[in-house]
Image (tube, rainbow, N blue to C red; front, top):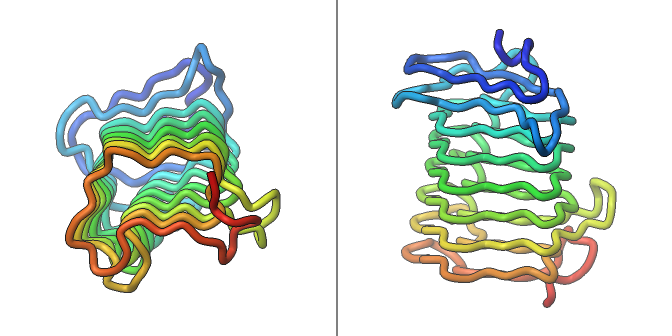
Length: 221
């Protein structure tokens, strides 16, 4: 209900309880973001939104903040952000979702910080895809995911240049992932980026991998 009513500058403050997810497709601006914030513990989204098979879906919407939700048992992603810029995903716990904890596609200047992403049944804890510029992925805990802890893939077949550039991957704790293969930090078509101060242990495949399969160019610099 609230997601259907918000406009630039609004904050939705959410009390403890179980909730249906939401789909937001409204632009805001730098000075007046739209904020969804859990103000108590145990704010749980355990049913998909009515539009996509995800808990929270942000699509064609800039300057959105998602802060403090537990999102679980979703048919696809806990939190999905596509074709949206300047989005902040912070302090969320995304677990036991079918494909991904947090997924992005064609997002510039996204900040993914201080989230826990675990027990993704089929793929990755955090997945940044499709020609993303300046993503920051920091201070997250990604563990017990079937695929990668953090996966970045430019995927040129989806359009644009197929490059993820100027990424910062910092201070993440990544362990017990990759039963299905992949890497703790997996990078296909990632360039001009910094990966530092991450703690990586007890993963079942590679620690850090840089390569080109689907990316528009090799990973470099």
